[in-house]
Length: 237
Image 1 (cartoon, rainbow, N blue to C red):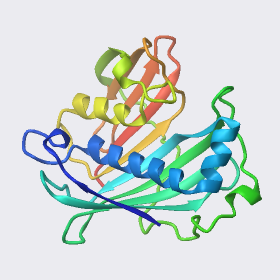
Image 2: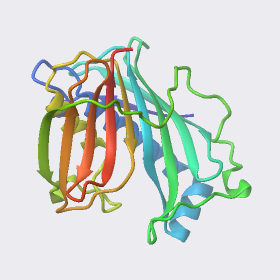
Image 3: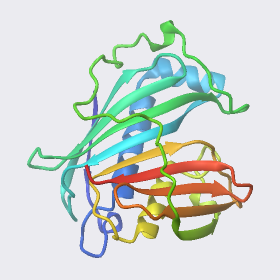
Image 4: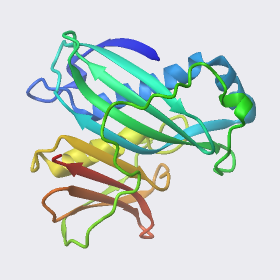
């Protein structure tokens, strides 16, 4: 278990002072990176071999939305590192110890030079920081099945430099940030699932389609060659 504390600032909230979901997601991704840095055996192994962990899928359950100046406790637990996938659970709680968000994250281990997935050996993953207890939440399948629906709205974005992270592709949270704007509060949801399929680079043209469906609402991300990049599902559970 790894814990950090954060206070919600003005740059993290919407016009009503409520924490943006994509900002909460950023907090989750941050603690995952911080936790990894603290596990010396794993961190050294990844640096020496030019490996990294790319997010493959995420499920975020929204229990309560915190607001400006709330003090948050963010907890990360890694509960699997076998094969090419790593699984972890993240919770965000407020100062009253009320859980605001629960998230189940699936990462894939990759060679940064080739982009190919790699398997971790038992010796590498046999560290005490990896526990056996999954987060206490209903975990849906990683793959998002998309219904045959008409397209309600289409947006096109030329991916700018500011969207690119240190892995040289668009940061995982920007997919959600874009989808929140496209959805534009048209649907009341308390669960989000994200499935990442392909990385997208700076200067690429990305097309986002909001499907005309009720529950769930779905955003499809494709490039100019119609290659499927990601899917985001907004669900009222």
